Image: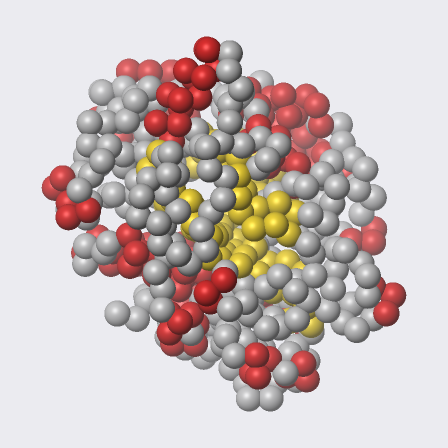
Length: 479
C-alpha cells in the first residue's frame, strides 16, 4: 500500500518527492546508502531477494526512480510464479545503473521484457532524469551555486525553474508522462529552443486505454502494446501535483487525492510563510504521517485503528486489527499504522523472509531538488524488526546532500579520462550534524525534536469524515 507524492510547484525546490513504503516489518531491508557495486546510486535495498533490488533511488547525476506495486484484482495464489522471471525491485536499479536516456531505456526495457511483463507482479514505475526546462544546466551549475543561507528563502533572489517531464510506466495500465508544460507555457519558454523537439510535446502520441476491468489479461495486453509502441502510447499530464499508489495512475485511490491536496496546501503555506528547509522537511514528514484510520480505545478486528503513536504500550496486540479487515480503509490513509497479518503467529511462516506478523508504513523518504541543483535525500526508518515498537528517534534518520550538476561534470571528466569512478564518502550520518562539505557530500541530519515525532497532534482528526471525499480533500495542516 505504498504511496508517492511529487510536485513541481515550489519556487525554491522545482522537484519535491515524498514516499511511504508499506511492507511487512520482517522483510530484510538495508537503509539508504551509496551502493558498493555502483557508487553512483543512492538507495535502500531489499535484502530478502538475491537480486537486492529497490523501490526508490537516485544517482549523483540526477537519475531518479520510484516503484510502487499494483494491487492485482487476481488473488496472489492465482498469479503465475514470477520469482524467476523479473524482480520488480531490479527495474529500479536497472534504470539507475543505465546510461540511456529515459525514452531509450523504456524501449530497451520493453524489447527485453515485453513478452513476460503480464506474468510479473503489477507495478507502476516513475522515472527520469532531473533537469530544468528554462536553462540548460546540465553542463555546469549556475553562478549562484553557493547561495547564502540568509537569501535561500527569498523568492526575489531565486530564478524560477521548472523540472523537465518524468515518465510513469505500468504493466497493468500503460504509460504516462508528468510535469509536461502546457501549450501556453511552451509558447512562453523561448530560452530553450530544444524544447520544441522534446518528446514531452509530441502531438502524435495516442492515449492509452484506461479500462479498469477486472480482466487482468486484457489490461496486460494493452500494457504490452503501449510499452512497445514506437512512439509509446502515452497520456501526458501537466499538473503540478502528482500522486501514485497501488492503483493505476489515472484511477487514483482516495489517499492519492488526499495527498495531492494536502501537498498543495503545504506548498502554498511554505511560500506564503517563507519556510526554511528544515521547516519544510518537518511538515513533509507530518504529511507522510497523515492517518485516516478511525480512533478507538479497544478496537476489534473489524474496527479501524489510529496507531500512529510512538509509544509501544498503545500497540497491544489485542488492539491491532488484522490487515485484511481494513483493506478498504488502507486505500484512504497515507500512513498505515501497525497491522496484524494473516501470517500472525503462524508457525508455518515463522522463518519466511518475505512475510511476517506485522505490516505497515516502515520507511519514509523525502527528496528535494533545489533550484541550483542541490539534491537532498532523507530517509526515516520506523520499523526494522517484526514487532510494533518504533525505532528510537535518535537512530532512524539518514540524510545525504550533493549537487547533481557538479556531479555530472565530475562524471563526464572522469569518464573521458578513462579513470574508474569512485565514491569519496559512502557513509551517511545519523543524527549528528556535519557542517563541512565532505568532498561534495553533506550529511546534515534533520534536527528534529522528539516531540515532532508525535503523529497524533500533527493533523486535524479526520475520523468523522475519512470517507467524505468532498470535505477531507480540502483539509489543510494545522498552523
